[in-house]
Image 1 (cartoon, rainbow, N blue to C red):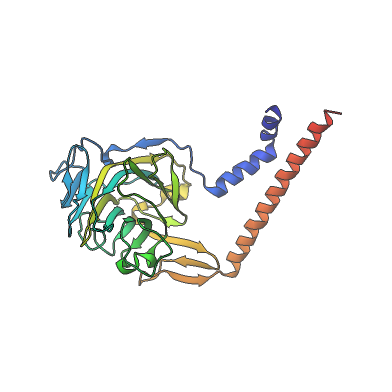
Image 2: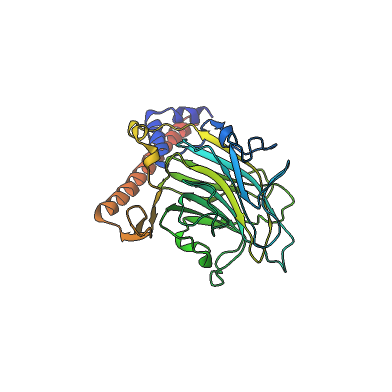
Length: 339
C-alpha cells in the first residue's frame, strides 16, 4: 500500500491522471442538490390548476395520494403532467420512479411513457400524448412494437431523441430514424419499484435504469455532443390506443450538478442555444444543427478530423507507455530490496 501511495504521488502520474480526467469528462462525485421547485413528490403538493401550482396536468391524468396516473388501463387515453417552473440549470440529473402495469390483451399492451425537457408544455399530440416536432429532449419508454421488421430489439424499449422543432417522430418505425441510443428493459408488471435517471452535464446525456430491484444503476444510453438550452420545462406524458396500460409516475426528483464551466461557457446565453446533437460514428460525423429540414446529415470525416483522431490515439499510446514504464521501474526497485 505504501509503494502504491508513493507511486500515486509522483508528479508525472498526477499530471497524466488529471489529463485523463479532463479528457474523459468525468462528473462522478459532484455534490447533488434536490431542486424542489422542479420535483414531483408525495403528497404532491403544488399540483393543480391554480396560479401558484408548480405542476399542471391534462387529459386522463389522475392525481392520488400514492401516484400520478397518466392513463388508466383503458383504450384511447392520453394524459400528461408538467412542471410550470422553467429550469435554468446548466447541469442536472432527474430521477424518475414509475410503474407500468396492466392486464393486457393476449400479452399485448401499449403504448408507453415519454419524459420531456422541452420549450413548450401542455401541448397534447400524437407522440405518447404530447406534440410532435418539439424543441428539446424526449425519452421514450415504448412498450409496443410497431415496426414488425425491426426484430433486432426487444420491447419494452427505451430511447432518446433531441429535436430542434423540425423532426417528426416516426411511430411506424418506433422512432428509429431520430433515435440517439437506447436499450431494452423489462419495465412492465414488476412487483418492485422501477427507476430511471437522466443526467445532462457538460454536453453529455446519460440514461441509467434500475428495474431489477438490485439497488444499482445500469447504463442504457450515453451520448456526447448534446446541446440543450436552459429555460425549458420538465414533464411526463403517456398514451394508450387499442392496447392499454396503467402508466404511473411515483416521483420525479431533479438534482443540480455542481460542475465548473469555462469563462466562455459562463458568459454564454444558454437560453439561446439551439437543441442539437453531434454524433461521432464510424466513418461519419452526423449533425442536425444547421440543416433547415431538421434531418440528420451525414458527412465524411475531413482530413483534420482524421488527424485529430490519430493524434488522440497516439497520445493515448504514449500515456500508456509512460505509465507502464513507471510501473515497471517501481517494480524493479521493489524487487531489488529482496536481494
